[in-house]
Amino acid sequence: MQRSDIHSTIIVMIALAFAILTGFIRQIVVAYTLGAGRTADIFLIAFAIPEFVFVAMPIILTPVIVPLFSQIRQKYGEGVAWLWGGKLSGWILLILLGITISVGLSAPIFILWLSPGFNAGERAQTVQIFYRMLPGLLLMGMSALVGSLLQVYRKFARPVLTTAVYNLVFIAALIFLPLEDPLSRAGWGVTLGAAAAMIFQIPLLWRIRPENILVADGTVIDQNTIREALRLTGWMAAGYGANQSILFFDRALATSLGAGSAAVLNYGYHLALSVAQLSGLAVSTVMFPGLSEKVGAQELDEAHRSINHAMGLVLGLALPTSLGLVLLRTQVVQVLLEHGAFQAEATQAVSTVMAIYAFAILADAMCQPLWRAIYTQRSGKIVLGVNSIQTIVRVIADLLLIHRFGYNGLAFSALIGLNLQVILLIAFVSRRLAWKISRRSLIVCGKIIIAGSGAYIVTLAVKTWLRNSIPNFPPIYNLLILGVVLLTIYVTLVMGVFNLFRRNEETAYDKHQIKLIK
Image (cartoon, rainbow, N blue to C red; front, top):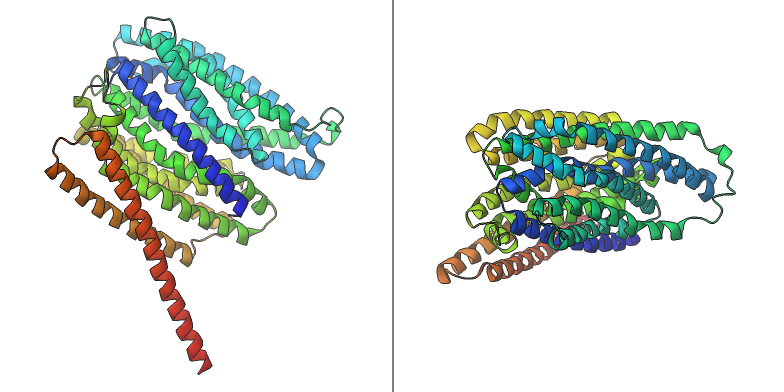
């Protein structure tokens, strides 16, 4: 990665950190208001489709728009590229409108499928809350479209911050909307948050638009690229749909395990998701435009270096976060969620699920740079194939593990499926781009694992000492102290291990040079 990419990565990480912070606050407010019982389950089932669209649209549109828009921009100029982008946007908005209407009409049917443990009254209430969220599907799709165009111009911060904007508006709606029913406030909060996320990005897009759009020669636009973009969008949507259908399946199974099971699964998953967002998503978001240009120019050696560097950076960021979530799982849930309607008895359940998901999300974070490498090939079939295999494996694992481990079995299935996905993506990237993990990258990964393991052991010892010495130590101080210890030990060990290996490498090189001289 170039220096400018590292600078952009830092900016994106800061923006993501703010988005994650507001996400934690959103989870706190939801837990405080809705608790971890059937009320929270109703909200989560109603939110299943909007959540899918909110997460899916950037993943579907960015791999389509960034490479193709950049290609047309380089070949024909800014004006033609924007005319092409306008035509494609029109088609995408039309498709989004059709999806929104279709989902609205079919809501009673798919909510029936998603809530096998609900009674008729609970399902009817879920449908009512969903209709308050329905306009958010179109609004968030438009927000993702604008964000994809901004990333072409290396404008990463504002698309990333849309999540924070959504979270803040949702929180405000849940607290301050003059409606008595908290579920109604939550439903409208989803739509208002999506509208705010879209509006937040439009001024920047307007500022970067070229002056000569209207005088550009639109006749040079190759209609095949529009068809290719729509075709690739369809493949990406199918692939992501195959991937995310497992979340619907998991949530539906959880509703059959008793009141609050879907809520426990959701809280644990979203707390762990910060690992992938702060590491894999930040690094891969910045690397993707440059990687697309390198692959397009057939600069494969540079592309290989970019992928290897990104993989090491993601592991270096994600591993200590995952270990921290596992080690401090109870304190994290106590500090963030154990307030209001969220009772202490739910803490142990959520913390266990979160610890399992932490390692599953670590694998997901490692997948992010590999997915971007696949996206440069514009092969929707690979996206669909990998996601379909992972989903089939997870469905089988769900059915086998749920009877023995309950909703924890659903988290274990995610761990199995996402690690399988890492293996599949490595195989496909190696085949399509002639890439392989370099020896240097393997050494770097080994050093990171050694440092992470050492930091975990030392912090675990400090945690045990604190628990025995000060039994009633407040969770917030426990979390802060142990978090600082973990981070300090990890950074110290990383620097020490890297310097040790570097000295050994230099010593070996010096001995080799002396031997040659003799």
